[in-house]
Image (cartoon, rainbow, N blue to C red; front, side):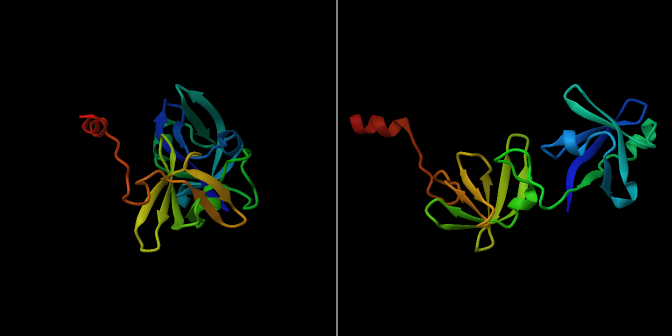
Length: 184
């Protein structure tokens, strides 16, 4: 199975290094020197990582055969793809690969069907499940412990405890003005 593990950004310096946008929780495993990665577009690769280092909070990589800024800049926006055994599990107990979560049924803790996960959106602050509802509409569910209470891969479902208004229009609005009217 192939997983996107990074996207190549801008060239860094004049010796062929590039910045990368990491898209894996295991960069030390997937983006280590010697790793051979497929690419999208495919004609760009495969690429073999020669060196890697962190500079100012960003991962910089250099690939074999990419020795100057022009060659590095030509790789910009290329996706790096690792071959992963489909049976392989992430190291952490409560960690999952996207392919494990796609197509899970989403139900509330009360057993009410919400829909099916069609996509995982990786935002800077948190990940979101994109859930397609039975009527074809979509709802976004933050993948946080307070809302997603259980992932059951054997039963192929994700159990959620959504706050009011997340999956329906019954938001609770709290206002201090309500209290003052009752006292008057």
